[in-house]
Length: 322
Image (cartoon, rainbow, N blue to C red; front, side, top):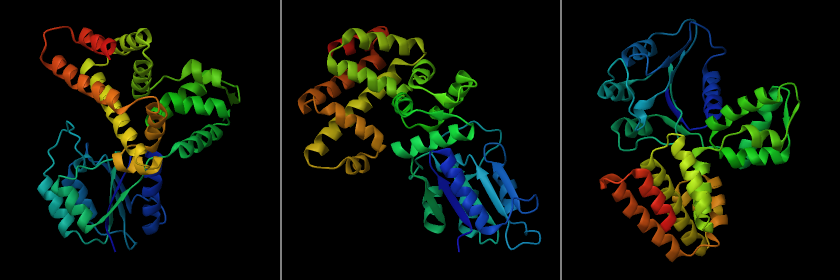
């Protein structure tokens, strides 16, 4: 029987649902005596470990949930207390219960290079909660609107996914804005979505690459200036553009080899929704064109990091050139 769990994934409600299921395997209710919840960014691990080793009260086990367990990721956070990872590893190696400890991470990836990740994977139960696909995200959006006695039309839902991608945190923020915007109206329309929902950075970059592919230099430069006005850094924008074209290149090659959409997503380790959009775009592109753009991305990256010229100008010239 496992006494330590690591549950991770980027879709918060799905991760929380999984954690709740684990909790209810061991205790009937989250009472003050047999349930504790901590945030690793706020509480020293020694305090959490001491609680984990305290006997339960009139129960076989108690459950300790540790939110924000960033020590298993590559994330570097400023915290008031120091965390000795060797002591955490020692705890993972020696802890035998009877209480249940659940580490919770709201990210899609762990840092597999870390000893702490290798040890918890080998010794305990690690569960990755996969992100929602397009249909799953639509169902979740409809459910959340229904809970607030609202409904959303099918075309409005499609538009919302188009603008936000499948990033759950973006979706939640935009849903809250929509509810405030429509007031007492029971139904959300496509017009409401168009007027209120902001396009995510990733979707803006996808749109930017679309303008570039179509040779629409005017709209591409205009969108670039909008992103700069939104305080996005040129180096970051180029990195996202490069990543998008690298994905196009990989998708083009794999699709020519007969890989399915799901197989491509697994091979290149990105969300299937991104692959779906990429497949639509690469039909009109050839590999030589994509390779040339990727080379220009590398040249521009060097220029941004070494040239004395204005970085925005360098990025504008790059877009006009390709």
